[in-house]
Image (cartoon, rainbow, N blue to C red):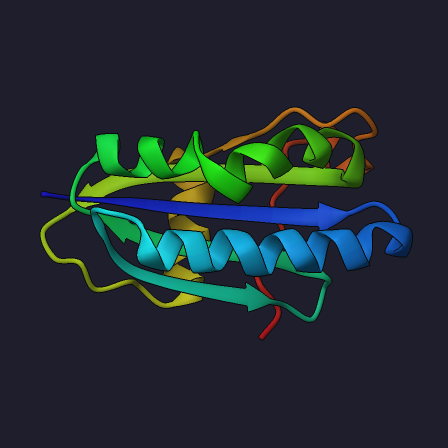
Length: 133
């Protein structure tokens, strides 16, 4: 089985955008180069949501990536930078990544919101907007 992870972030202010873009670049490069990463894609949607969708050999590979490098350095900053954050994980047979609409459906069905210090009303209501392509 393949382990799949999807995340969605929304920045609470444009002032965080330069640092967010820099760490997004570093983290996406790190993910693609990480041991156990099978596929990775990224999306900035029309609602200013930032999505990641990755498949991994196993959960341990994903966690090793998550807890190292640029990704580990940026995670604490997201508590203040974001007003919305959500994630979901599931297992599937193939490493192929689903379309964004299917990823969103999975996130709503089996995902959860993540802690942020300044939650939006959508975050407080645990609503996860669909990606606007």
